[in-house]
Image 1 (tube, rainbow, N blue to C red):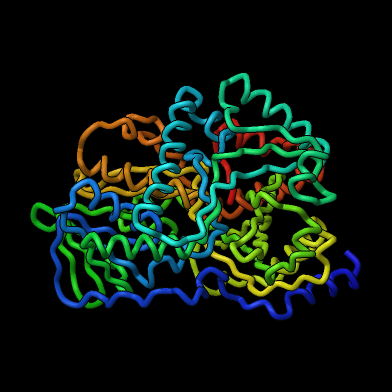
Image 2: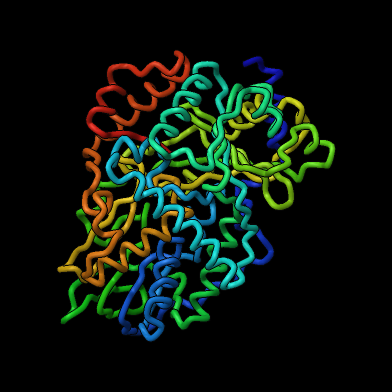
Amino acid sequence: MAPSAMNRWTASLSDAQPVPYWLEDPGKPRPQAALTGAETCDLLIVGGGYSGLWTALVAKERAPQRDVVLLEGREVGWAASGRNGGFCAASLTHGLSNGIARWPDEIHRLQELGTRNLDEIEAAIARYGIDCDFERTGEIDVATEEYQARELRDWYEELDRRGLADGMEFLDADAVREQVASPTFEAGLHDRRGVAMLHPAKLAWGLKRACLRLGVRVYEHTPALDLKPYGPGMAVRTPYGQVRARQVALGTNIFPSLVRRVRAYTVPVYDYALMTEPLTAGQLGSIGWKNRQGLGDSANQFHYFRLSADNRILWGGYDAVYPYGGRVRAEYDDRPETYAKLAGHFFGCFPQLEGVRFTHAWGGAIDTCSRFSAFFGTAHHGKVAYAAGYTGLGVGATRFGAEVMLDLLSGESTERTSLEMVRKKPLPFPPEPFAWTGIALTKWSLARADAHGGRRNLWLRTMDRLGLGFDS
């Protein structure tokens, strides 16, 4: 990379604020007061991201008389739920490839449940009047190398043979560039209905308002410090009080689980994104993008990108940074060396947008597990349920996870709880230094595969056979 090019690209970041664009919205609601004193309830939910919010909402929809309390350690939506790209996918399995590899006998059922889940999210947004810029645009996976184009075509043909290609279309280079004009695009696989775009923070805030209207008691700036049995139920201690509940649902995801044995199943991966200034009509015209689909490229180290409601481009991904020891710290949310790298990649994809500036640059932690998709379970003789491990695809799948947790707490067998995906867990990550060493070797191998026509080395092939992985 020539110094002059680096200077030109980094100059586009000179005004970028190191804060999530979504969380700076002027419509951000005031936080609810912290819990002081003692509370009792039927169902206590720990975590005020999508996982906890959907659990509270669905619990009240199922049983309006149920007394529900939700605790959030900081403010609703401040972590992953307010920092992501706003891709709300139907997939429950982190994509069809991962789903077919892990649950081939259930994949049609999982697809049906995922489609139904996305439809229910859309219906809930309409029912509660949640203004979150929801657009059922679909998504295009794009190939930026000839070998990726061949793989995309082969993959589309395999999906068609399996009866899983409904709503999908393979696009050659001309067809994909007609949708979005980048000289790097060689092909695309267009999923027309399986993904929606939305404003992630507005979704979290809208869910909070809906929960409050239904009678959920929400306490913010109230971290849950520990979880213990208390008589016939459970008790959670907070800095200024305590909640006693008949049942508890944990939606803490990347943060250390109050069920200690669950902690080994996830590691934090830091993901980063940029947001441009609003594009002018001329700039938008130079790249097309009339149908506003979400986009993601096909490399192992991939980018995801989409248009906001005011025609900014969010550009994220590529680096997936694992901090040694799996620590979650605020200082990891800002990484200038990754922002510079992403800016260079952005202008490589859209050279016609040279001169556009970035207004925001931020990062955040994703709860990754070794099978890339959520896992579920109970503790304390069925009085506690948990869901975690969404691996960057939780905007939609967390609602399904909420349904699963409530099913598990009910003790009844349902269509969801009978799934192998729900009944079995991923392999846990090893302790340090083995986790860091294995993840570093995997990241190096993935980058090497991208640079060598997608060829996976012995390490990656071994990880594939063991069902292990590392992804954001």
